[in-house]
Length: 73
Image (cartoon, rainbow, N blue to C red; front, side, top):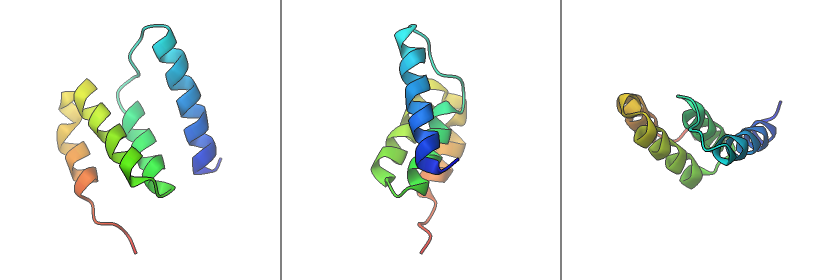
């Protein structure tokens, strides 16, 4: 499945999770962030990494690492 297709599926799942008043599981926003970075949407990727840190503070070290990772040429 292409990254954009995965993002579309995750966005739909996120809407369903929120509609039920639930919180996405650990790693959900991190995965979305990685996919957004993969398709070149760095701004949205950073927002997803921030959301992961907010929901799951134990992920802060790893999210900070991903947020500082140098861009590949």
